[in-house]
Length: 136
Length: 134
Ligand code: HEM
Image 1 (cartoon, rainbow over the protein chains, first blue to last red):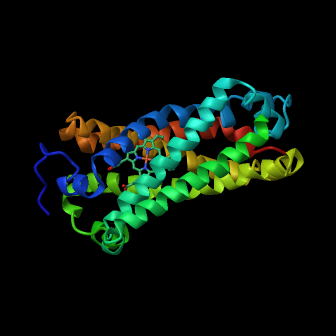
Image 2: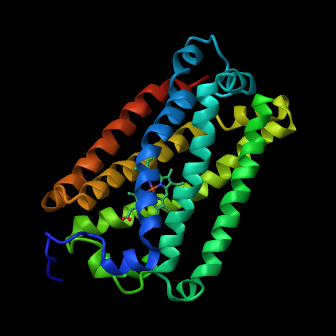
């Protein structure tokens, strides 16, 4: 296969037309924001408490009380809810892109998109309800 | 190799246009897809696990203590590697969308691989005390 013209954009025009401009653009924006949100999330849950666990001041990295204390701060409530919403949007929009490249799904694009939104909103509500166990 | 894995990718037409036509370009794209789908699967599992908090603090702690045993700490390192690769290559794609460094795409793929390996290695190093707990 001969190398393609490297000066052209990597994404085909066809793809932009199939998935639409906004989903394409928001996939980029949500991905960019997730770098920070996922970064903070993994750092706080897996690494910031490591010293305390190693020195035996704390039993485990993640326990109910620890999460509860973290979520007593407004900043972490904001981070966790934003993370939940954005990661669901980004992940399911990514699945939509993949599915739309597949003929049978592409023929039912509108229904599939509606289904994914339903799944996303439903999961957000479920996830928010789970988080509220630590907050309320 | 690239050819046989092609069928796996559910690709329907614009395959050639998707990647640079080089091997690293194909792998970059394939790994982005593989990690993306794996992370979506993990996301649903993760939300299900965290929702055990609804059954009370004791239930949550019982589940979380099991999930922090050495075996799962090792699995977490794979998760970290997947997130790192996906995020780094995501930035690589963003650069190309902005018309930056397209000609260096192969080099940047290896930069992503290297950074993923190094940062996962550092995370693994700091996790050693958890992996070799009594
Ligand atoms: C941490 C920061 C992240 C960044 C910077 C990022 C960036 C990106 C970008 C730029 C794309 C589009 C790739 C393309 O069109 O060629 C993408 C695709 C995707 N992402 Fe992410 N992402 C991140 C996290 C996540 C997470 C946590 C998940 C899972 C919940 C996820 C799931 C997906 C999926 C399923 C795709 C579609 C893959 C494909 O089209 O082959 N991403 N990501």
